Length: 392
Image (tube, rainbow, N blue to C red; front, side, top):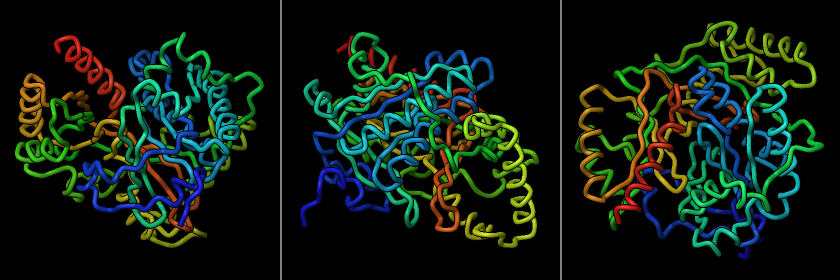
């Protein structure tokens, strides 16, 4: 059966065994006429230093929510990056997706006082510059997927986005932007505390001819488990980590972004939803489409604590001993030219939610380390990558 270019991702077969994520032959090239939508927050390190990393995470998730609400949840692959996000959209959806992203850029400036830069870069242009976009579709649970992307195209798009001269032809302007559709975007769970001692945000990539499965076998020997295959060991959003308070501490950002037209109405709606959630949460009763038993079974599965966006990105809960062994191993492997990595360590993780249809189990939860998480790890990764390039 021939699949049209615009239905490439919708019709792409999915896989459910994350341990096979390193099988490169299974990745498929994105059609040449697709576009990479890239967005990140300018001076996000300043926002982190000011204690605003939850706001930073919310904006990154808002980029994904705005685009998916505009063009359809099953059509567009995406990667959440902590201080931004990247999506890959077919040409037929470019106008609607770009309009939604422009609206998020405008909201970021108007209500969050943060600058979000954004661009739409043709996949064909990235390939002309030596990058590529190849992907697989990982099934978290029935109906919920994450894209795994390789080819260095996302990294190249990120470099273009941050270069004022290179990004000029592709930049998305917020002029005359309309409010983006951010229904379903929320941040009602409190930070997820470490149960082992340290929340570790880790980004790593093979180098020097090494493979991801081989690297992870070595890391598994240090941790006592393999983050790619030991699913229960790496789940973040379950058990004692889940803490809810009333009202949620992150509700302000949710209302500012999701109810920009009428903040008062947004506060009232959010408070009412939280009242019903508390009742259902404490009693186990189903209220409307929300079935708490079903939701909590799915919640631990539907998180992005493991993903590939040109590099492997993990959020792990490690003991002090595991962390020490891991750091020593990564330093040695980097010195030998076997891998590039970036890491950030904190006490808690943050979770931002995108719930499109709770009755049909359509919900995704973005997990990141607190106080900088993947954003800080990415900066460390790029610094080591540049140093390795100079050395070689």
